[in-house]
Image (cartoon, rainbow, N blue to C red):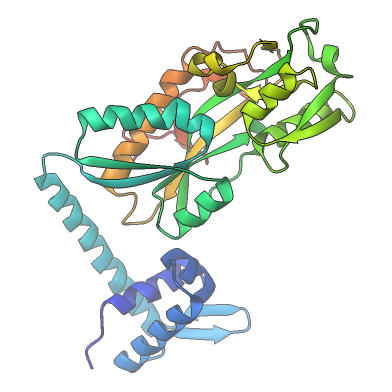
Amino acid sequence: MATDPRRLGFLLAVHRGGGILAAADLLHVTPSAVSQQIQRLEAEEGVVVLDRGPRGVTLTPAGRVLAETAERIETELVEARKALAALGDEVSGRVAVGSFQTAIRAVVAPVAGRLAETAPGIELDVQEREPTEALRLLRAGELDVVLLERDYEADSPAPRGTREIVLLDEPWRLVVPAGMPTPTRLDDVRDAVWLGPEPGTAAARALRRLARGLGGTLRTRHNYYDFDVALSLVAAGLGVAMLPALAVEGGASDEVPDGVTVVGLPGLGSRRLVARHRATRHEPRPVVAAVRGELGAAAGGRAGGWRRGAAVGGGGAGALRARDITGRRSLPGWT
């Protein structure tokens, strides 16, 4: 019986992932689907390809032979796709980008507008999504790039099968009621009432970090997720808040309500904006890499106006070169 070559991809995923569950995650299928394909491969070849033990699965000698064959086929297909792409004069296709409000306004929307004029072959689909939902859609293959936020102290490696690129580090800003004396140092707001960010957000992690730096627990009231809500509460004199520069400066400054003062202080740190995408032998597609590069260029342009040192401790806004979250410097094309 001839082997269906598509089954080799399932074996290769088990080999790379180290197990059935990891392979299912890489392939965006159920574990039972992986097991069924492996069983059919074994039936077609008449050999056992996996040793199944209490600690997981490993490849048998026959499995290693087939996995190596699968890798050679995959490499040849990648080279063939590169050659086919080189035949075209332009990169084209659909790219779905999931992001949150401030990043869409400051980075994604300008890129979408520019690409519509300069690269009509690229169809950019912008979707405002909560981070948890955006990551689920990325794993499911329904989004190609997801923009995420984190406090600069919260860096962590990207999950297996993905890559994260640092787009920019933007300084946190202190936002206080206009009637309050303008703080000149963090100690001036040690005893202030702080607005409480939604748990799990970069703002919540940054506020916890700030509280540790001030040597205690900050008094918090109310709760916000949207930065516009925080600005409205500050304007009403209900507390102070720490918001990212993208939410209160540049084009966003037109939306800062009366009765609010925005202050930059040493020690606030910075919020990191990263772009996550799938990273396999087949991905990112050339069109996804092109959009990712445009996002990096747009983010770098936005950060260019922030002076180094405006945010202390996180490298400030001067760290504008895109790089891998692992610390590897990325090439200009973000390959």
